[in-house]
Image (tube, rainbow, N blue to C red):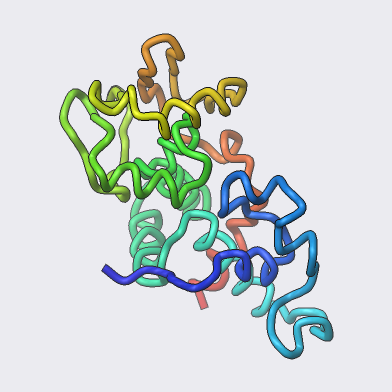
Length: 208
């Protein structure tokens, strides 16, 4: 499966804001955006104000990069969102937030979505008692997410959980820190998502 393999710090610089794609590194002075707060490339420091189309494109690119998706995947989610009842933009954010890799990240089981994606692929998580190793799996209300018993003692997972002990779980997840078990109690809504994404610009872009 195709995936982005270049330096992810360039993505934050291109969008002009931290997207916390590198986990711990993003909180230190090693963050590329702290050192070079301008877009990458020869003309990165001389970019003019973006056009309307440019703003819409940047918003789509930013959303893709937050969730670690390629264009074909993102467009597929947009088409899925457009077929659901309600506002397409909000439906899109709800679908993206419902991915298993994002859910694992939101629960504090990983320091970044990329790390969460890797952990899911390695089969460390169960949904309703069954192993799911597909990062794009969409969780639904009523489903229960747990860490596989044999994975709970792994130093990597234990250290991340301890580091994120104070991170609050989103309202759409009922998380028991003692058992490391989370139940999906609702579909994520726009109010549950703390990312600076203006979804209406994405809808306008794809509606052209």
